[in-house]
Image 1 (tube, helix red, strand yellow):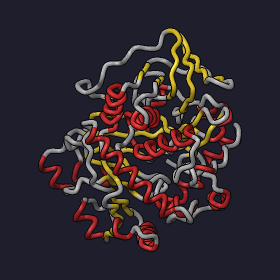
Image 2 (cartoon, rainbow, N blue to C red; image 1 turned 180 degrees about the vertical axis):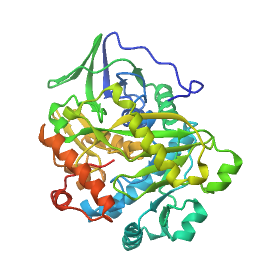
Image 3 (tube, rainbow, N blue to C red; image 1 turned 135 degrees about the vertical axis):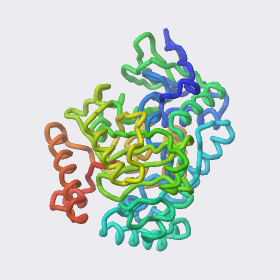
Length: 451
């Protein structure tokens, strides 16, 4: 978000009452895609979007910039949870990524879009075998041509670090981009299409009768024929959904630009996105001006699902991340960090989005993207619009769409369970991936917490 040259001016807040055909609540990727696609499907309908602050200010503007085709938080999670649908989900996910790339070009969105793919990295011996098994699973399900296993020598030809023992290169299913510039470009595309956007207009409650959905705001209200809720990590206007989401905080650093010597020292000519394979993992990529974005590892939950601006900065995590960075790239010691930030993301117990409707099908929602929503939110927008349309589609017939994850328990059990899970994941990382009884129980019930 620290880009005053490209950051658009805020649009005025809503004052008074207005009416529309479709109301979208939330100005991140999920809401922006919903509003834009709604206008593309039917340019005549009146679409209003409400955002509590500025468009893209939260996770959509400050994430790692990995735009993954996966709709299921990775192939392995999809295979474990929806084995009968995984090939269809992979196909739909790739088509969704193609559609994002097409929209970026069609609307002239300058967001540094690079479809370089991603390499998942093994940094411990047991992870090498896991990556080989992952590659075998992909081949068995028709995705082998898009996935390449790299041994130690091959992975270090791509990106040089003594920490990397092997890699799995997803060649065409992940793109890198500037997240804030994508959000700002979608905002401009929505305005150009005729969407009425009101910023600094938080939604303060939702009611519905037989004809209209009404959402109150501090200085007015919106009366709509239908509504799409795209609030993700923030408390849903539908209280019954709040048990399905926990907000967790993720953190990242940005280096100063690498000079030619430093770029040569790490290689990385393919500019792929990278992540290691630990439970508490790091993700990292090159920016357009050759900085390294380095994030992940700590995933923090605050008691009572609390969200607060003071949690966006955490010096102890930044120090930890910096130490991990130089352990991974000792040849870059002395490189400075120009930015450090954090933010909240929504997670659910199955690590992938869930969907549904309320108030007789006139309100749709999507949430639970769990840190992999840059691409999947566009698919979620299509699902919400399909559900509001009331006509079954290939998307709405998916088990992924029809069934919900398990809800999280209330406090204090929620906090204690998340803390125990995080401790257990760290312990598994230290014990060659061996999962304790708690994690095995979570696996058996389909519960979990992830970034």
